[in-house]
Each structure stands twice: as C-alpha cells, then as structure tokens.
Amino acid sequence: MKKYLIAGNWKMNLLQNDAQIFGNNLNNELLNRNLSDSEVLVCAPFTNLFTLKNIQNETLWALGAQNMHFADSGAYTGEVSPLMLKDAGCEYVILGHSERRQYFGEDNELLTKKINSALHHSLKPIFCIGETIEERNNNITFDILHHQLEVLKNVEPHQISNITIAYEPVWAIGTGLTANSKQIAEVHSWINNYLQINFSTSLKILYGGSMNAGNSAEILAIDNVSGGLIGGASLKLDQFLQIVDNAIQLT
Ligand code: PEP
Image (cartoon, rainbow, N blue to C red; front, side):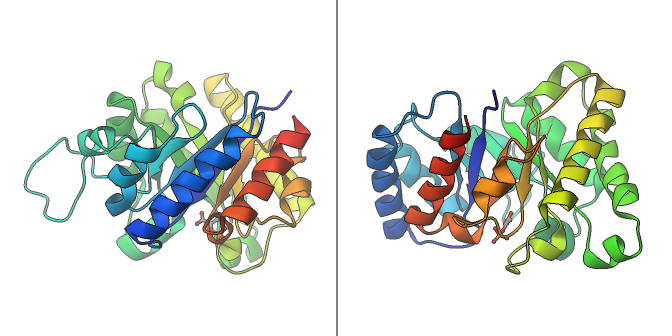
C-alpha cells in the first residue's frame, strides 16, 4: 500500500494573517479525515514559520521550509540556518528547487553541503530534480537527472533513507502544463531504478509541476509516484484538500 506525502510549496506567497487562517482551517479540516499513513506538509516562507508552528496540530500536518543555508550560524547576511528552521518547527526543507537553481545558481556542490547539513540537523530534505524543456527536447533528460542525483553519492549511507526526491520537470512548474502519465511513469521508474542500483533502496518520489485538484488522482495513481509537491494549488485550501482526499482514496 502506498503512503503518500502531499506537500504544499507556498513559494513567496501569503502574509501572516492568511497563513494563520490557512493553518487553523487545515487543522479543522484534517481532523475530519483519516490520513492513515499518508502525510500532509506545508512548506511556508520563513516569515510564516513561527506563526504556523504556534497553531499547527503536529499530529495532522508537518511544517517545512523552502531553502536554508548550510552553516549553523555566522556572517551570512540574509540567510537562515538549519538550527533556525528547527527552532521554527520545521521537520522538512525543500532543497534544489528549480527556481533556486535557476535564479540563485544552486549547483551540485552547494546542494551537497545543504543536504548534508539538513540531515545532520535531522531536517528531512525534499530534494528537487528535473529537466528543462530544451533538455527534454534534446533527449538528455536522464543525463540531467543522473547528474543532479550525483549529490546523493556524497551523503552518508545511513542518511539516504531520510531523503525524499521530488521530480519536477521545469517546463511543468507554474505553467499549467503537466507531464503526461507515460512521461511521469517513465521518469519515476528510472529514478527508482537509479536508487536501487546505487543505494539498494527505494525513497519516496514526489511529482511536482502544475499538479492540481483535477489531475492529481491520475498522477498519484502512477507507479512509483508517492506524493506531490504542489505550488499554485497549495495556496487554495479547498484545492489542496482535494489533492489530499485523492491521496486518501488511493490508500
Ligand atoms: C513547485 O513549486 O514545486 C510547483 C510544482 O509549482 P506548481 O505546482 O505551481 O507548478
């Protein structure tokens, strides 16, 4: 039986008041559902973390951040450390999101430091990988994914199981385009094989890229898809809950 992780990535959205309303309503709504072994996660902007921590029903949903610095503390103006994320109630942290790779130049070297630091502090990384449309059209999707996954070879073997992978084709993020079921199945199966060959393990592999209330049932039912990383549709509670409900129905 699948155990899903339904993760919202709010990106740079929602002020404190909206976050508070969302968090309180999420508590109430999830109380009426039987999540069994599936998990719900909200990855909020830094400024909302303490607010959410203070209202969160931890038995129903987890809190995560969208990025972090690798150092514990120090002269890194504008950055937030893993210790600060723990302090603010985070259990998870998204690392290597394509927007971080694209706009902030995050590469394998930096992401290796971030992932190892998160694991050292018992934060669970959601490690994002994915190809651009040019890369897909040039038939180098698997080369790109292979290169991005090389980061995991620098993680201590006993920590690998604490990592979740999110496959997010860059061309499907925030565009309204989703990969089709065949494309998703092909890539998720490839990632699963890669993990088996290199680490003799399976990890949760989320799909991300314009997942919404309407397409989530079909996507979540695909083999080797163990949840979703959801941007736009995670900002509207009714849509986010519909995705959660679709996951519940499939378990
Ligand atoms: C994301 O931000 O990880 C994402 C998948 O966004 P969207 O659902 O809006 O495409």
